[in-house]
Length: 146
Image (cartoon, rainbow, N blue to C red; front, top):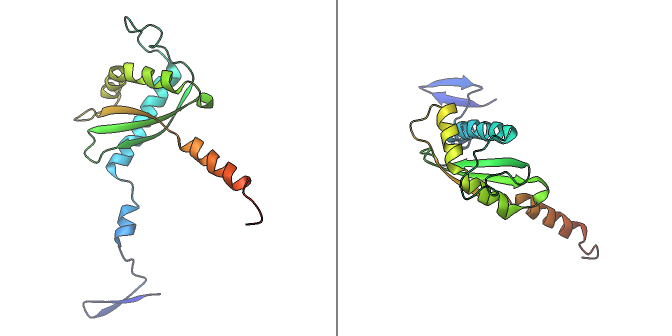
């Protein structure tokens, strides 16, 4: 039990609000990013993407995709969407697909979510799984004599 003097009185079990405690609450950007992730997941599960002229082959999703994380700026005007294709294959084709369908996703966000500004979308392959697998292999194959 902590005793803290407040206006000359002793207080028991007081909760101190430190910057770490305040930062632990989800920010608005984090909450909106979670809603954006749901929109992307719904669209990817439906799979009804428009076929763009002169890009018929690239307009189709080459492989099933998982949206791993969306990094949204604090002002909600730009977002980086991290994705992983199934098995980690066809990275370039999947990135090209997302770049071509950028306007479709922005339109979907405008219809599903009530936002003043639709964020500018950037798509990146999430290599954190490959990185963690590489670290795991290094640790597994490490020389036990060291």
